[in-house]
Image 1 (tube, rainbow, N blue to C red):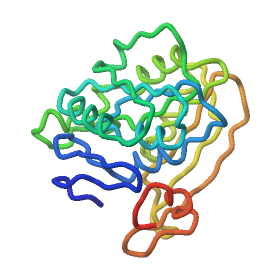
Image 2: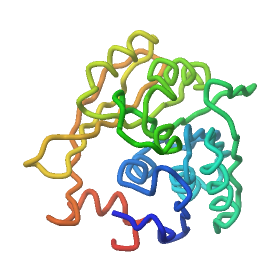
Image 3: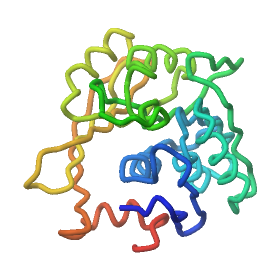
Image 4: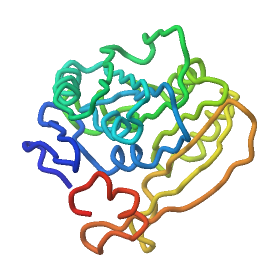
Length: 237
């Protein structure tokens, strides 16, 4: 999808990602555009990487307070550059820390994360890439436990995880006494198995809405629903 050496140009901002272990990609961009909230006052992006999700949220919610946390030094440096060079009037505050060490005196209306989720060795000798990809650096139970304390009573936490991990994710959410508002299975094609699922969770008990979303891809063409979702961001739409 991207040339990692070149900045990725969105319609209203640019993302430098050559120093980041994880480049601009489908999951992060979709998550940033997907997240719904009528009027969030405080937003948190967990593991911001290059700052992609936080920048999409800044475009969508110009008046919100947006915080981004990131533990990796290369990503911190690059996210800061991307935030400083963005055209948006209101800044994004970057916290160079692990989620487990992040402490604030308030809670958030909306929290997003595209977390590391590989449970097996990915075979990479790059420590930065391993940190960005492997769940052991941010275990699912620690992610959910931290979010529970950072989310306000009416807030939403929206994150993406592999579809093959759905059962384990649902069990972990239940164990933390959190509740799934919406569970959306993402497909690139109706003829291929799903690789990703987006979970929207909250503190209050609720019924779960199950849905499917087909994006399409470069080879077969993108679906009208995906184009509509991403048209404010991608220059190709």
